[in-house]
Every structure is written in C-alpha cells, then in structure tokens.
Length: 624
Image 1 (cartoon, helix red, strand yellow):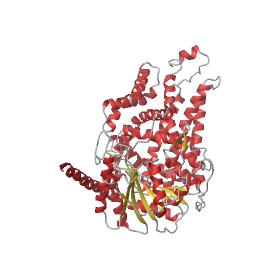
Image 2: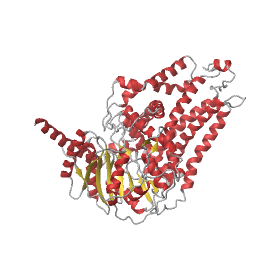
Image 3: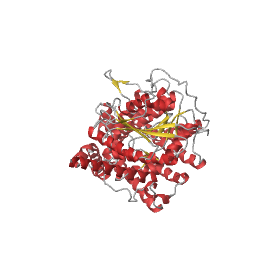
Image 4: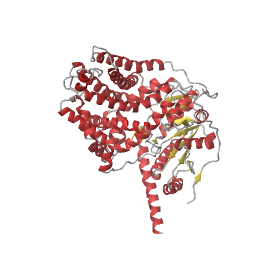
C-alpha cells in the first residue's frame, strides 16, 4: 500500500529552539491580566503545610536523646518533615478547593471579552495505536462539533509516528473508510512521518513548522482522549476571550475502566479530583501547568516560545527532554504568556492503565522524564511557580525512596529501646544514635496524624461533590456510593505501599541509567503470567515477609502491620488488579457509567463500526 498523505497545503510557521541559558520575552505576548487574589490563594495553600510541618518537628524533637541531635537523628527528622510537608500541602490544596467551591460557584477565568472565531487544529499524535479505537474517538468529536456549529472552525490531524507497517496499513485503511463516512464539511487529515525524530515532541513540532501558520490554535489530544463538543468549544472560547493566554488546560476525567485497578483509579479521580483541581487552579493563577493533552494552545505563542532544545548528557551527548509538557508550559510563561487551568469544564476524558503492571510501566517513563526536570530548574527566566511545578513533579517520585528509607528506619527502631534491632550496636558503639522510645504516647499521636493527613483529601473530596452540583444518586445512590468509597479506601491502602516500592525502583532505574527510551503506552492492558508478576514484585514480597518476621520476633512496631501485609500480598494483589469487571457493574461506578455521556456512546459505536470494516477487509484479503 502506498503511504497515505492527506494534508492541506503547507503554511509554515518558524519554531526557533529556545535557550535555557538566556531569558526570552515574546514581543507578541500582550501580558496577562492581573490576578490580585492569587497571592492570597498561595498563602492559604502553602502556609498550613509549613505550620503543620513546624508543629510536627516540635513534637518529635523531644523523642531523641538529651545529649543533642546527631547526624542520624537529624537525617531522620529531615526525612519525616520533608515527607509531611508534601502530604499536608496536598491536604491544604484540597481544603482550599473545598473552600473555593463553597464560596464561589463561578469558575476562575479571565475577564469575559469578545470570543472571536478561531481556526483550531485538533492534533492527535499516535504511535502504534489501535486504529479503529483512535479514529472512533476522532469521529465522535468531529461529528459533535459539526452538529454544534458556532463561530469557530475545527480540523483534525492524525499525526502518525507508527513504526509497524502492518499497523500503518490498518491506519490508512481506517482513514479512507472514515473519510467516506464523515458528514460533509468535516476536515480530517492524516500524515505518517518517515522517521519519528524526537518522538511526540518532534511530531508536534513538525506540524507547527509545516502547517501551523494556518491555524490560530491547536488542541492537543492523546490517543485515548475523548472530549465533548461543548468542552472543546468552552476551551476555545476561553482562549479567544483572553489574548494573554498561551495555553489553557482542562481537567480530564478517567473513563472506560474495566479492571479492578483501573476502576479504583477512575473512582478516585471522579470523586476526589474536583476539590484538588479547584484548589490547584486557585493557587496557580496564570502560572499553571500542562499535562500534554486535552489542552488548547495558541499556535503563534507555542511556536515562538516553546521550541525545546536538547539536554547535555553525562557523556557529552544530546538527550531529548522526555516529560516535555511541564517544560513547554514553563517556556510559555517565561515568554510572557499565561498558562491557565480551568477545572470546571466538564466533558474532557482520558483512560487509565488497566493493570498494576501497566501502571508501573507508564510510571517508570514518567519518573524518567520528571527527574530530568531537576537539571532544568536553573534555566534563566523561568518563573518561580514554573520551577515549583517541575520540582513538585520530581519530588512526587523522590518521596517514595524517602518513605522506604523511613520504613526501614522505623522497622529497625523496633518496639522500643529494649527490643530494638539497633540496641546491640548502640551499646557497642558510642557513635551510634540513641533512638527514641516508640511506645510513647507521642508516637501514637504522630502515627495517627500521618494516617489522618493521608486520608483527609478523600473526605474533603467527598464533601466537595455537592458543591459541584453532583448528587450521590448519580453514583448509583448513597448506599452504593458508600460501598464504593470504602472499597476504594481499602484498595488504595493496600496498593499504596506496593506503588511506593515500585516508584523507588523507578527512581533507581533512572539514576542508574537502566530505564531507556520512551516506549508507547499499553492502553488496553493485558494478562500477565504468574512468573512475570512474581519477578515484578519480588522486592515487595521479601520486604513484607521481613517486616512480618520482625513483628513476630517483637522487634518491629505493629503500627507497620498494614504496610507489611500489603507488601507481603503484592503478587496476589497485582493479579487481582487486572481482574475484568466490565463497565456496568455498579461497584466503584462513576457518573459517566450510570449515565453514559452521548459522546461515549457515539465513540463506542464508531469504534465497533470501523473495527468491523477493518476485520471484514482483512478476511477478504485472506480469502484472495
């Protein structure tokens, strides 16, 4: 089959590579509207976390020897307080979102202005994806936009970087079939690059440089993205009304979960996400972040401000920036463009990995990219909040080895000074630290406080649901919602220690250079053999067994029992994660399952239709 290429006439737009060693201001950026409240929102978000961490430090300082704080004690205190700050910062962000929703029903947005019509390109970069799945979603969005009409003009570009020739042939068959079925007036384009230079970054840059001059804005979608016509139009209107906005990000909800693990993720996102997103939008103001998809970007701003350079590797070679979205948002803000987050736009969807192992594989890629940001923090001209976003993303992974280190320390401290594993070494070596008595009531208070801070965002998220106009009846009724809430709580507690260990492994793989490349996501998940699962979770299993043995011997605190049980059961829990439940079982169900959005029903129908056409064509070819 010939290499299909269905594209409009080229309309080039230059996209210069940016320099991290010098500042840059885009002369075309009109500047962002002043946000007088954002400083207050940031004080409200950050201050409670700082005060709570200071209070914790005061409480635990007295645990240690009266002889003073040594190096090891100081390290332990630092690790505990560092972890606690980020936990409480999440709590304060969710609490801020709850307060914001309770006092202001209006979405934080730029001052309204005229929404002039924009020429918008919907970009769908793909790499070895299932064609009928991607194009079924594409058709549902295009048909809904056509039915809505309006002042804006939309065209969709399927930007293929597929390397597998068989998949590429299926893509091109699907494109031809889809073009024959689309309603008149709908613009659908397709091109496949001969080489996937610079992966997704290069894919988008290639489009900007060759066709970007013909479009005011581009709405970047992922292969599993699905957005209603209303959501796309709202984002486009917001960009049209705010000339200083370079990028406006929506808050995608998870849909399509069929397995135990995916449904846990989907329920958590659907229930707890609104309050967190609202709080984050408040303290971000004009200095938000970008998650790589389901966001609209002003093409001229992106082209002039966000061309990514290579990073210098340890051996002097060049390295591609992996988690490019955070950096692109930082570059836009550096150039004077606003980066906004509008979480109340409904109808923006994506999907979650279906199994724990699929989630871990994706997380390893993200870890590699996010840790790379640590080397970009000192880039000239970046706003402090942009640096914070990149630091926060990296710390999200660095916290896991810190938690693991604390777990090991806590385990060897034991039940108290008499029973401690370290007792012998402390008595034999005067340089060893004198560890605190962990049977103290303050110990119980700290443990309870830690658990409370970890659970608080979930309860705040539930309290925020009615403030978003959501009723528990939309989740199948109060009783079913309560069962789902308790199930999610239990499963999250069980999976959290496993994810902690796996993220620690991801950090080590990145630091040691074992994690290579940026392979495409396995979106549909899969069934893994017991051997594969056992190899993946060997460290968790051994760690859990060691903790249980320590408890039986009276050397390890029983407060670690929930963590020990989770780690010991990592293999069966991982097998459980991929157990298929279908999409309409009610358990851990979300609003989008009990009342399926029309865009989802349309996507399912169009996927099935395209799949039937492809499979029918394959059967004919096989018969010939």
